[in-house]
Amino acid sequence: MRFFEEIEIGHRRELGAYTFTAESIKTFAAKFDPQRFHLDEEEGKNSLFGGLAASGWHVGSACMSLVVADGQRLAKEAAARGAEIAVWGPSPGFRDLRWIRPVLAGDTVAYVSVVIDKRTSGSRPGWGILTARTTGTNQRGEEVYSITATAFVPMRGNKA
Image (cartoon, rainbow, N blue to C red; front, side, top):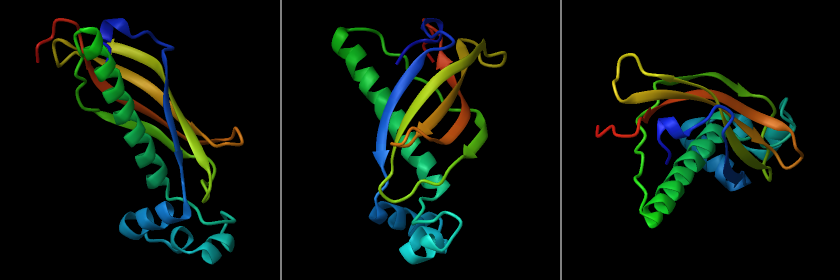
């Protein structure tokens, strides 16, 4: 991962894609969002969604999994080059979470994150706060998900 000083507004990260199968939709829903249109194909067809729909929380969780995997990949690459690795801090929150279109069984959603703002933390010396808008687009090129989230990012030389 990069340090705060190395990240520019407009920086884009392709995070990867996730395919929502009927099985994964039902498994997630049974545990975390047991609504009829997430659990049963017929109920999904007869709903406003028009098919078995993934929970919005499932769509967001798939995104988070890809964010973490991409960060691990970047850290591995940096370590292989012998570069210092920036260990990011937690997120102080998010805003503007939107489930724009339903994600149906068989849909593949590709996620992309773009840095839209950055500032030095006023309360945490040695840290910056990065703001990024992450979107998910299905295989038809339709945006289905978006979120604006922040993260604490260490400045070079921060040994916290």
